Length: 405
Ligand code: CTP
Image 1: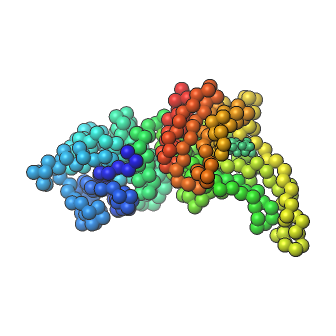
Image 2 (image 1 turned 90 degrees about the vertical axis):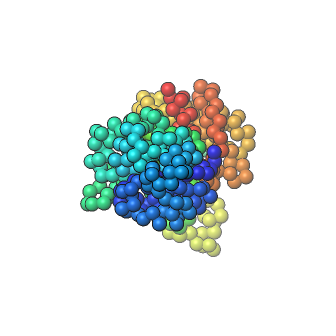
Image 3 (image 1 turned 135 degrees about the horizontal axis):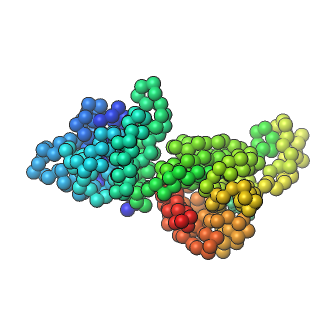
């Protein structure tokens, strides 16, 4: 289902409840029918009138309102997607215990659709053994409990427990609706991803760059973090994207900077993905001051280029030398004979897997969606159906996890 129709936004009683308003708007703006189901305590933070106005639907909290409509069963049965944000430690505990003492928990107990919980609580509560056990229980039952963000909480303290941004929650929930629960297939794995485009300076104001937006690499990073990995992203130029939640980010500019940062981290990585669009060549010399038309016409009209290192091949060489054991995944953007050229490139580079996509006619670069084939060095081909880049990232991780096993 590309677009969930009936979305239930569950809201439990935490200070982050006000952010649920943005979540409701996000779904509404995409044409979904949204029903907000707050717990009684959520209404201490945001009034029912706000949720009713934003969703255009009535708001009830208990199982004894509008009994003739059998709401405690109907809302859950009719839902295509349930997102609980914020999910407090208390509501997580009640859902894990199978309670149905208010409309929200009754709705979740009835539902057979995807359920996504976005926790928000103090770090101590998130780390408490009771919450950990409840979260594990829910995940083992196929509910998706998102990893909260790290950051400032209500008081002076900071740590894991902050609600993810509403836009991130909405996007992750849509991905779950499309591909199923995110799962914890990367628990404890160390994932290193390069993303974005590199830039090679000609002079202080000009450079050679490319149209990569960094979206696909960031989506892979964000999902890896949600699947339990410890993630580092080495990012070149990216569109105005917000940094992927839960990942460490290292900014670079040129191919050689990117190479140095990737090599320095390769030994510690279990999985390396080269999603960056790396400039194959750079100007032989970088001018210290701006080249002037009329004065430096020669230098400007004939920029001599020298080849950059092949970062992916260098990483494969490192593994051959025993300096890393990481599984290495590359990308290939091709315009013609996509699968044939992709297979050749995989062999030439010596990586374990290569995600090949067709970029003919301006597809992929800077675009919100993607598709392709994940080729394995063992001869396997996994088709990655077209979808938003985060959905593609989720499908890629499913295929990578299956190959790694
Ligand atoms: N790559 C790299 N270093 C380079 C060029 C590419 O690490 N100097 C990586 C990319 O990040 C990608 C893969 O290699 O994961 C394939 O990139 P692509 O540009 O398609 O390959 P090229 O080797 O440059 O081949 P082509 O001649 O088709 O451009």
